[in-house]
Every structure is written in C-alpha cells, then in structure tokens.
Image 1: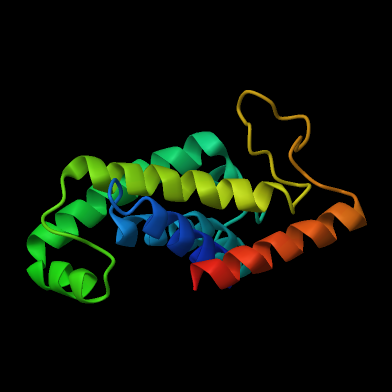
Image 2: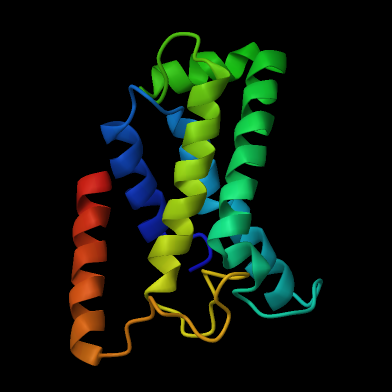
Length: 159
C-alpha cells in the first residue's frame, strides 16, 4: 500500500493516542513513507526485487524505524522551525527526548508492516525467521471485506 491513506490514518490515530510517549511526526514518516521507498523504486524500475521485499519485514521495518527516529531527531535539532511547525499542528509537545523519536519510528515501522501483512500474500513479514509464506495473510474474501471496513474505520478515526 504505497503512500495510502490507511497508513497515514493509522499513524495519526495511534500517534495521537500515544502522543505522550512518541514523537508523532516521526511515527507518521515511518508509517507512511520510509518502508514504501522500496516498492516505489521497484515499480519505477530503479531497483530490482519484489514490491514487498526485504523492507517489508518486521526486522528491517523496526530497524528503519530506528534510523527514521535518529534522522528526525537530528533534523529537528538542525532546523528548529520544524519544532514550531509540529507544535502548531498539535503533533508535538515541548522539547522531546531522543527516546520518543526512536519509539515513534519503531511503532511506525511495525504498524506499516502489520497493516500490509494482512493484505499481501507475497510478503514475508517474519523473515529471516520464517520465510515459507506469509502467516498473517488473510485469503478469505469475507475476512478481507471485514478488514477493509476496519481499515476504513481507522481512517475515519485517524482523520
């Protein structure tokens, strides 16, 4: 689901619920953008491999979340205007600690992988520990319909 509203809305919903402990902008960047760089590069023919390849594993998703947290923390240190922008949008509070950025990145990366894992059979979210198939994939049409309704509810609640 590259750059879909489902990722953004789930990030907003969870971010605002966990706002006290996480840096919400970092969670949003990890949930909506970072993990889906790989699929975009593959679709554009810039990179080889599967659309939902190695970045769509919990191990690398969490690692990318940590990297995202560090980068967002450093960006905010260099560009103080970002902090003002985040506060004006109610996405951030006072000076937050590095820990809140890291938690936001990890939660965002995990959330993105989890949302996609239910929908794409080619994903291997548990790699490298389990690579045979995607045990989280929902193949039943009825269950998928319920899942999309749930995602729409999350979208509504997140917005």
